Length: 252
Image (cartoon, rainbow, N blue to C red; front, top):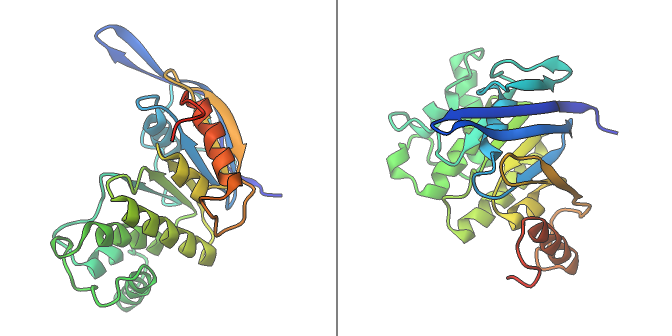
């Protein structure tokens, strides 16, 4: 049985607007086990990213508590790395230099070794001295994954990290992520609007309600990897999640 890595208790968050207080997150409680992969899906604008930013420590909740390893979370921590859809690769640094960034407790020779190891792990061997403008979109996302894993985070926060990629590259990056997670243990929280992506990757899927958001439903994905996305089990789960999101059961 997994111990709890992340625990949210009665989290609420609102923002001031010209029409008064806009309540975004309403009384959300959840736990994520150590080494578990949890995906969160919900309608556009429901507060998914706000919730993720609170868990990662970039935004403070109005009330409730967030615990990481049983201790209150009040600010970002080196234990967790956030990968967003916007990207965070520095354009003035090479792939190797980007991957070395943040490895401040390593001697330079060790930094290079760690950077080159993770570059190879994500298929960027031979591109260590390339600059971001010389890479494709998919290669940039690989570099971002490699940089995140290089600092050995205990928790990986992913906010629609592959949404800007085309369908084929999105699938390749999902498979890349699963391959790395099979080699290294991390707790992962994924925000996505893509139900298929959530089913492909996660151990558990939480569906959020429209704003002010609450956890509307939870689905256990008890299917071994690699998952065949055309299987009847996957399609049945997909239809059930889409139904929770208000999409007709007969929709494609």
